[in-house]
Length: 127
Image 1 (cartoon, rainbow, N blue to C red):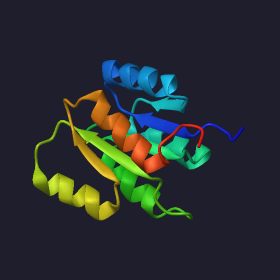
Image 2: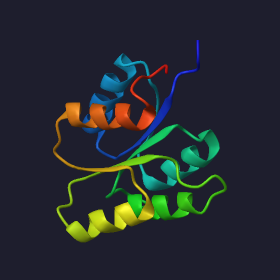
Image 3: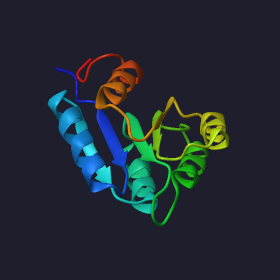
């Protein structure tokens, strides 16, 4: 059986993190969590997850700074879904320029997130 796909959740909103963690673990993904940009960046560089779900606005380091740093690493950017409460289209354009696979505005239906995760990771947790 192939190893589980790993997803790193980087968000300082505990309620959102726990909801995403529960749903994604129920689908068979291995979940890691970081509560701020600095620890998210450290874990991403050390663990090299299959997918990053990244909040834009966080303490210590914004999602954009995390993306900019990860983009320069050997191997390039980890596939990323950015989630944000920000309405600005400039932010979306910048996130897309940095290479995010999807950009989802909060509040969002968890089904939308799950569809995006499955699409990016190939449709199944153990595929």
